[in-house]
Image 1 (tube, rainbow, N blue to C red):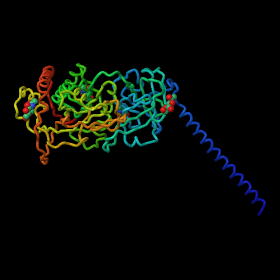
Image 2: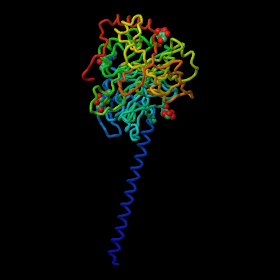
Image 3: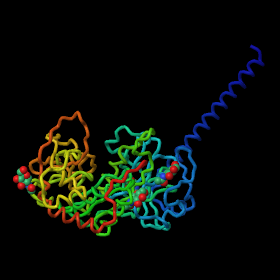
Image 4: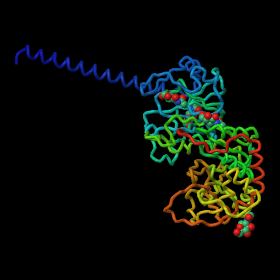
Length: 476
Ligand SMILES: *[C@@H]1O[C@H](CO)[C@@H](O)[C@H](O)[C@H]1NC(C)=O
Ligand SMILES: *[C@@H]1O[C@H](CO)[C@@H](O)[C@H](O)[C@H]1NC(C)=O
Ligand SMILES: *[C@@H]1O[C@H](CO)[C@@H](O)[C@H](O)[C@H]1NC(C)=O
Ligand SMILES: *[C@@H]1O[C@H](CO)[C@@H](O)[C@H](O)[C@H]1NC(C)=O
């Protein structure tokens, strides 16, 4: 081997060594930077970022590399000045398909946020959420942010739709009672939503009724009046409605009861594609107007305000058989259970009105009072949890479903109420000629007849020029 060759080999080796060294050094530097970055990100806990935030307000940059001005319903620049304290669906960020509605104190160290989100996003561990807390409703309020990853828990019964209702829970900073919370995806900067936290309040009511979202431009004013008046007699103190869409006659009825302090209507401005009537070709993105989100919002909203919360729809009535009122009925049921489940009995609306005459029948017909006129029910008795409805002691419940309780907080169990003691009447159209179900006479509601007629006639006197409905629409 010549000298020249040896020299070339020597320089070659040195070159390789230096290159390798440089590469290694570069790699190390990158790693160190990454580590440093991680540290600053996780040590973001709980510092006053007020100034930062207000300078950056309006720009959202999340870890999708997405930079856009967020457009929450209040307008970002005056998130606090124009905020309506009424709950509304708000964006979490411009790029993330997660929406928030309300935040509740869950326990000493936990806040529960009611959300709807795509099932895909729910499983995406690359997107991380933070809760940031505000001590008062002002841009100058001390802002605290805990980067601890928010826990996400889908609510059941999403029926394979693109979106699901979910609970997002985040740790409540120790021994604090923040006024409001924001959910964000960008390391505690630029919140695009703000949710006043609902804390435990003193009990004010005995029975609060939670109703699934009003939709399809709901216009059966006659049904709504009968529902409120009948439940009032049974013992309801208050009704909570979620409004996706109503017609003006129903608005008048709701306004009338609102003035009497009996009704609360929450705007339910769902941002995704929902059911329409008539049906459209486009796929519906969430099961029945996010019913699960509404029911659970109602549970948490009334957890401390009401001794019991009653879940039933507009055409459903929990009717005691041995007592007249819910109060007496609950007294007689075994104590301590978190939920009392009532079996469903179908009363068919397409079957003719009772042929029996009774005083005030003309009025019942005038105001289309199904509970008095339809005195025939299907002979078939449905199973324990099949289409049933329930009354809960809300403090013992974590998650409710459409016909049953999904999760309890306490170690309690459901009490299935004997149908000979009380049952749920469901007034429905069934129009199925192949169904050979025969009818059975059932006049239990007649014991409420006098009071129900008197109160309903009075309500309609007050609502004289309001159309009873239904009003037909070509689109809704
Ligand atoms: C959320 O942002 C989207 C744009 O991504 C916008 O179309 C929608 O109106 C916003 N929804 C709400 C409730 O602010
Ligand atoms: C942030 O949350 C974690 C988890 O609950 C908690 O351990 C930590 O103390 C919280 N940080 C602050 C500053 O509250
Ligand atoms: C319910 O929402 C619809 C649609 O936004 C609105 O037109 C109606 O006035 C609302 N009704 C009540 C009682 O809030
Ligand atoms: C219900 O019907 C039964 C027998 O059919 C009758 O004896 C009873 O008086 C009715 N009850 C009421 C409240 O009308």
